[in-house]
Length: 489
Image 1 (cartoon, rainbow, N blue to C red):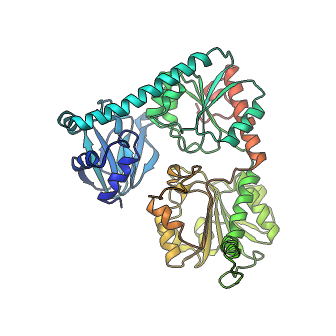
Image 2 (cartoon, one colour):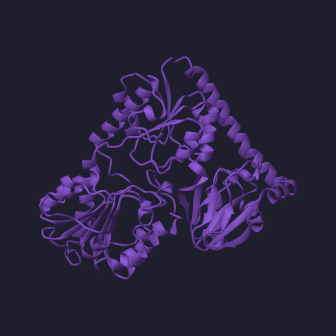
Image 3 (cartoon, rainbow, N blue to C red):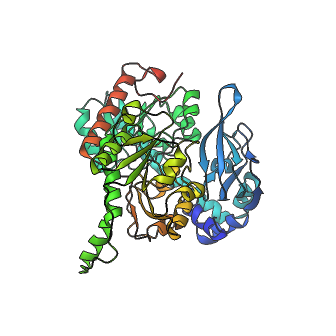
């Protein structure tokens, strides 16, 4: 649960409030109201006037959008510390989605009228907000100046967000001067959409936020295509893209071997305590106490999800002499014919596997598929590996399982709140995410920063496919016409 003192830290992470001094922040916090909701109760509904900001204090909140026939489709789940409706403090625009309590929920609210009263009665806070807006305008002015000189380039212009040096290098190599890529370090979110001014295509990664508000703003800026340089697209509001006729293409497969091999590397590191042994040697400790592992040969590995990555993981583990229990909603006959592989129901896999590895996409059906109840069904001492999506695992339940010894070890390349930390350097700051900080204290847990894809071959394939997707757009293909579209008719 988010405690009252944590609201201060949450607000500090929001660009709008980050420059306020502690006294001003406390005044904002003082005027926020606690509201308790029962399961299935609505916080707000799509289309109604937005007049308040919400901070989720505890519980889970479903984010729903109207689909065909006006049925509600769940597009994501908000958890402790999540924020919604921040722009409602400035203008009462219609809500872009419905928020519904999934279980018992407590939220803090700040409404438009109260916020405007705070600004009117506190000139200091108003001045601080003006300073924030002034910095924003300076950034906009610089961006426009850059675009004036940039506009002389007649090639198709692509704004690439959340870029790192290794990404820029590989895209420049594969681009062969066909397109004019502009590399931006910030992630794409509502605060950074203005950087896409003057472009027709934006290229994004797994932790960019392409929600309904961002899509609406991209449409206003004239963006016609979103090119994902990844396989996952749970961070994209597909219905909003359909509404504004923005084409979206992704990279369905870049190197299943890269992720599968990283999966098995995590298994071996957890099993043989490689990280712990390495740390000991660096300290001059050559003791072997506490480093005993087990033979992989003869062990039962449960593979949840038998798509391209799951298949590769199965092949590698069969090479170790493991017995494979596989689960997938759509079993693959080519896998079931392999010696040593058996498709089973999920419950049987959970109860009989020594190692469990996740290889499914994140969607409402798979969200928190590893939870308190599913962990209870597992063998005591089981190893859990997740190189797919953080939201597949209820991290609080995982920690409980590690503490009581039901889970013997865990290898994680993903984390449900990774967007705040992964891919960035926080070595000189304090990790304020208490759950992530707690995870790092376990010596039987290996965490890597979503690097399963990080091989030369995978990066090259990502760049090639992304550029091919953009090429199709340049040739006139749109929406479902694109080979790797996520927009279906």
